[in-house]
Length: 405
Image (cartoon, rainbow, N blue to C red; front, top):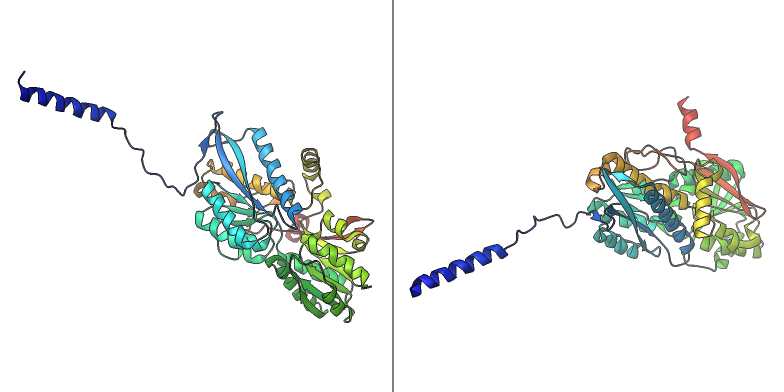
């Protein structure tokens, strides 16, 4: 073989080896779309996000929410859910927003980057509202179990839902109760200047003024304050029948104690942020006789609360604070929509969330065109003998049924 023939054979062999070593490149995918991953057991793993303040002064409420989500995930995995013909294993991705709006947006982006297919949270209106823009931009359904500020669902996003009554309903119910139930002629109002506390206080003020009640003082504090003596001394001189506090239990407890020490005879009233066992613990004897509301029917009227409560206490060795049953239901509403859509892809199952007709632990859940729960109930409670006792319930399924007749 001559020199040129040998060179031609060597070149041909090199080209053949190069062709054999070349691999087909995968098709490009949308990096922003959440992807269901195959688990080691052959199931498809689907991530659901949960956000609440698990550190700071209301961490007990944040952990309560997380526990509700954990229990829902555990129950769903035990049931062996199939979606679109595939066995699904759910995984909870939990984040702590510390009740801080800035941190709330940071952890929201973290959840988007982690590839969650939906989010339950946040707890506070002040963190829920700014985070909702991030979830909307990513096309992720978001269900809050506890944010009550009306602005959350007024933004026009198709991704925002809540399984609890809003502050228009709650503030109205509390204002009417102060005027009609307590026969108050003069009220003073304090709020913590958060989206929740101020928003609820605004709705309460509208409601009492509509009833002809005189608002003799409007003061504000912060959601980290512990000393209310200056505010209360100023209010005491106006001799109100009721003092309304828009905020959380971490401040409402000390507020009630300081009212008692100053000899203020007015009743303290507030919303779901302090209708908790923690308020009674913090306020001690000063909690007796005070009023607060919760968005929802009483627990003994919830169709699934007894069984939920038994499992909750057995697993976490603690009492339900307030929102855990709503968190549990919110997780299951997301999965119910996935099952009906036969897909865990948010783009596919998001439209089904709005069509929800689901009966959970807390009762029947359906949404209006903004994402608010229909026929949201509000229950007013009073502390009697160291426990919250039901006074009255406004709205809910029973009221809706009566209106339909």
